[in-house]
Image 1: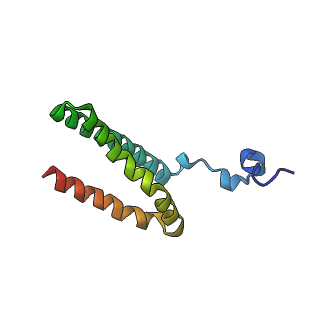
Image 2: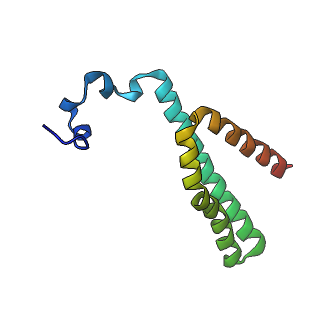
Image 3: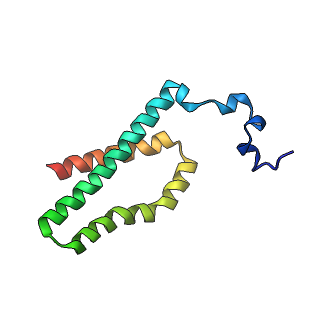
Length: 110
């Protein structure tokens, strides 16, 4: 018999119902596709902001501050966000964040 933490590594120990391939369900593949698009867009946005700041200032220190301003909120908010995600339904937690980012982008773009 396997220890409980090792059972997840053995497909034979996991019931067939739990081993389903997520890509076989349309919702899962749509979620994965949108998640990939979101992450690619976020990376493109990070590069574009850094590029624009460097193009305006020609100062590598300013570019470093842009990188720090992108990384620092992730570093400071990862633990509280993880705790909140464990306590609240993730869909209800994520929708206000997406709308806030959208409104912030619209405000900054104007």
